[in-house]
Image 1: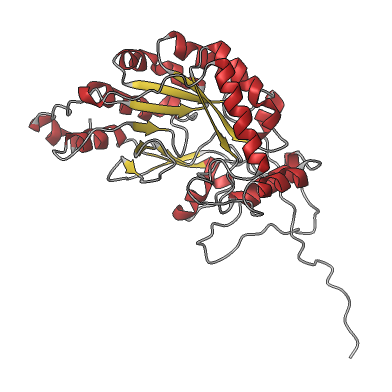
Image 2: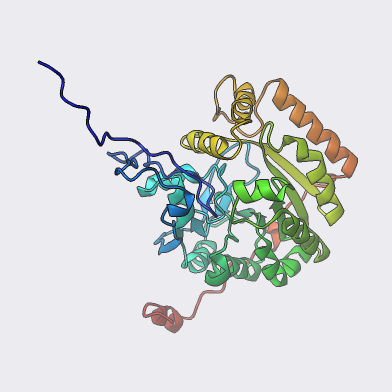
Length: 374
């Protein structure tokens, strides 16, 4: 039997292309989904970047019943945190929170930065939890998974509502952000800081504006982040800089300069985290490298493997943040020397829990009315 003619329209999987204003290159199926999505050529040829349909940002309601998340991780300096949003429009391709979108049946890729979930009930839920008789005050961290000052916060103001409750209760808070929007809330954070109740870290990944635009496309520009450090410090708010993540052969050479610029802007604290690539992020980051830095891709990933015993990630406590091996040791030593030279971390900030007072319960008639909305 002779073979027939070749199929004129074979299934051809199309390559994923970068999209303007977005970090992830692709939108792979979540790891819990039964099927897998692929884009195929329909016979008209592969599209270019300008032909791709836009991934528009949508915001859905998250009906959380509690708001304070707790952890027992020995390498995290807090055990309570609040995340006002799920997903983050900043689009940082390296974000270690991306895999959490798989729990929602969504992709850790483009879905993570376009399909957002907001928690508008967060201030009310926080008030309820702080009012419980068994609550014991401890620092609450904002910005541990997704940025509390991502663009949608400008209109939704959920983070501000949370801060208003914490200020009312004299409860300590620590914030990590890469957004200049935090300056809006200096009127709350300044008085809290004067009581020893608030501090903030601003994440500065790179000073290279072009690299920042490609790697974290909807976050504040590097110069705006340094301006934010200055504004916070001038308002009397203890302020630090996070040089995170340190990415081998991509931004590692900038570490000392970032620390110097931050110190000049008034930062008193500094920290760093080596690039983390858990679960789907390994593939998402590899795709991003091939799209935006193909000449460095193999070298970057080789150095990452050298810090994790040959793998792209090691989830073990004590190693997942800093790595191990000669390269990781070199980064740690460089950071230590730079901090000593610039005067970082000479004092340790501790939020004052002694001032905590539970929130005043709302009047019964107010609680009853709240069932029908404001």
